[in-house]
Length: 378
Image (tube, rainbow, N blue to C red; front, side, top):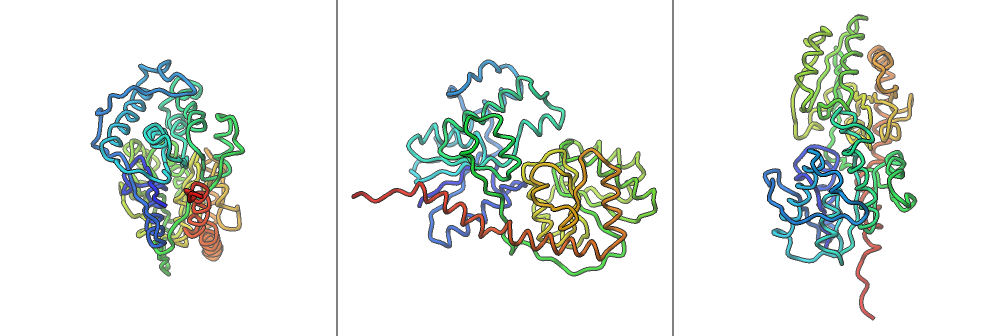
């Protein structure tokens, strides 16, 4: 089959999609499949001019709103770039962003398009304080799910919890498939080590949705109880200055290292002991599986896809969101008992290898793709 993987961001950008799709392409190429990657370069801005029309709702009711207008202009830019760059036909297009899916179906109406929804843009905006739930931007963005249902051939998402979330915005949620993300084990090389001082690490965009303010409060509690630690924060984002100031106010700035953006954090992770991320919401949480494959003990919040990866007390610890005391208590248990920490890390690694292997993703995707194979003429 000749398959196009239609991304939004270029594949070198951070995140669960970019951690997976290039490795999937490599595997399929080895199997003899023809697979290409396509995305919208960041430098393409305000080039598209074609009218945008959705079938299931009138987006112009929300025009004049900055977030909606930017979304529509990005859609137009994706149309412009796609028309200019894609001249050949494909047997199947697999899109990984709503804009990519809808544009591809518009420009290649006879080509089957499957769509993997990896995360919720509107939920992140709500949690980051950018929009209000039920406001015009929220209604516009959630209406896109119904448009996708109407236009594409198959919708897939990455966790049971995220399928349940989308169910409120489509007519037939039973038709939504689930293919959790997968990871190439060769990328992860656990390193035996003994750190005299426990090393905590978190990898994410520095935005309110990730709950790093809660993590810093929990670490302040650890310090007040006399527990030594170093907190490594890998990632960048609009909350960085605010978080650095909070670390100063909580008197843990000397224990906290802000690294900024790093392209391959998995090369860094194996030297640490505990991965912790108290997200307020998470569709899947690819970084937890990545940390598990590096044999780190996991601490996360009982939300979304995190709770599907971590079985509390068996391969990690779960705490409620917005609860710095509970988070501090979980971290304290792992800091105080290295044997327990190692046991959880081993269990997490075993589950990740079994459940989130790239081979499993390839099998599931191949089964989905083969539904759309062109049948030979009689």
